[in-house]
Structures are given as structure tokens and as C-alpha cells.
Amino acid sequence: MPTLRDFIHTQFVLKIPKPTASFTGKTVIVTGATGGIGKETAQHIARLGASKVILGCRSQSRGNSAKSEIESLLKCSPSTIEVWELDIESPPSIKAFAERANKLPRLDVLINNAGIQSAKFKVVYNTERTIGVNVIGTFLLALQLVPKLKETARKYGATPHMTFVTSALYDIAKYPKEDGGDIFAWFGDESHFDAMNQYSLSKLLQLYAVIKLSAIVDPADTTAPDPIVINSLDPCFCKTGLARELEGGLKVGYRVFEAVAARTPEEGARLVVQAASAGRETHGLYLRAGAVRAYVGNALDEKKAAHVWDLLCGKLEGLQPGILQSLK
Image (cartoon, rainbow, N blue to C red; front, side, top):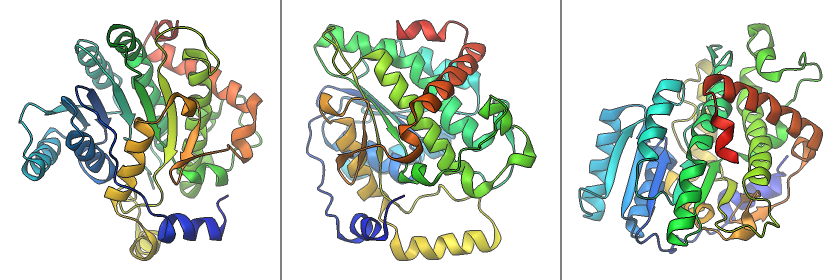
């Protein structure tokens, strides 16, 4: 768990430089881009010269508003930013989005930013909603776009990136001691729901999947051509709409804490852009406060990581038969 000293440093002391890496000629997808960190990330990338920035949004109207705001600020061409409908809770929506993305001439960066923190129990993908969206839905999209990223590397001599926006809260997640052998099915039972734990646990499971996916797609010591970079990052605690579903005293307490300690979404977006343009040395790794940080706690449990990955692959194959072929 981040120490108080570390929290004070990352929230109040750390100077986060404005990103300067060039995205000239690149095509970038940012999910969850109607506001907050997602929109600010898209804005930075458009400013840095991307040819096309695709906003993956559940709401087309909110996506159009975000597009208009960015265009008004940057005075960029109307053709630079596109809004594509994407609902991470819906397999058909994810499939349609992926099929459309796979028809692009190139795809240089996929930023998996979309996520939720649900205060009420609901079942999605036969598990609790926060875990379903942040883990199953997120990787259902990611795996379908691995071939396009590899193709872009091969055709253009580029180094594409797949970046996951995660959280340092993974280190406080309580992994159930007894999960019946299937953690996803376990949390499909409302009696196991813990609103305070679901988000941090979803981020731990996300990290397990990033670790395994990066090792399978492009091992760090690979000599194979056309590698891609798969990494993750914590954007610091930022003022976003992530906790919009909280209620009562929990919501009030969160808002007070947010007002006192949160960074702006634009500052968090700087760290996202940094990760999405980082070197091959970050492949399979986790960045926090602008630097690679060692995994700690449960994230070091290779047995759990392998088990969760196997369960996740089974879920994904059931939702999209043949999806694992994209990793070969």
C-alpha cells in the first residue's frame, strides 16, 4: 500500500511535465473519452500531432461534445478526432468497435481508460459489474486489437502501444481466501459483494492480466520482429467522474477528500500519455509517478496471476470464440 509519504509526494509535490513526445502520423484510440482523464488524454495526443484520435464512448452525444471542445481549443482539423460508440458492458458493441478498428489503415496506440466503480451490486459478464467491466470487458476489446497493433508494427516499422489505466489501489485489494476456484463466479454472488473492495480488486486482476498478456504477446527478451509495448500506469488520484455512482455519506466523504487531495484530470492525462509513448523497457511493467515501479503484494503472486489469466481466457473465449487465436 502506498505510504502517507508517497501519497503526499505524488499528490502535492510531484511535478508532472507536459508531454512532448510526437504522435505525428499516428492513429490512437482512447476509451472512456467523454470526460476526465480520457478526454484530456485525447486532447494531449491531438496536440502532439496524431493524424487520427478515436474517442471510444458509450454516449455518442457526450463524445461529440468532447470532440467539439477539443477542436475548439486546439483548432485542429475536424477529421482528426472521431467519435465511435463503445459500451464495455456489451459484447456486441465491443465486437462492432473492434471490427471497425481492424479496418483502419493503422493503429499505433490503444489506451484502455474506460472503467467504473459501482456502488451497487449488478451482474455483468456473469460476475460483479465493476470486475466485469474493468477486467472482462476491457480485455475482450484489447485482445481483438492485438493483431492490428502487430500489423502496424510490421507495415510501418513503428512500435505500437497498448496501455492500461489502472490504480495504485491494487495493493490494498482483498483477494478472497476461498473463491470456489473461480473468482469471477464467486463475485457473481451478491453475498460476496464489497463496494469498498471491488474497484481495487478489479485493478489487481487487471494487472495480473497485463503481466500475462505482455509475456505471451511479446516476451521482454524476444528477438522476434515487430514487437509492441504493453504497459500499465497509475495516473495518481485525480478529480474524475469515476465515483459518480457512490451515495450518501460515502459520496460526501469522497468528494471532500477529492477537493482536498485530487489532482486535475489534465495532470493525470500527462502520465497516461507518458506511458503510451514510453520505450520498450516498460513492456509488461507498471508506471507510477512517471517511473516504473516494482509490483508489490498480491501482484507478485505468479500462481494467482496464472489462475486468473486462465479463468479470464475461458471467459473471453466463451464470449468471442477464437479470440485467443489473436495471441498467436
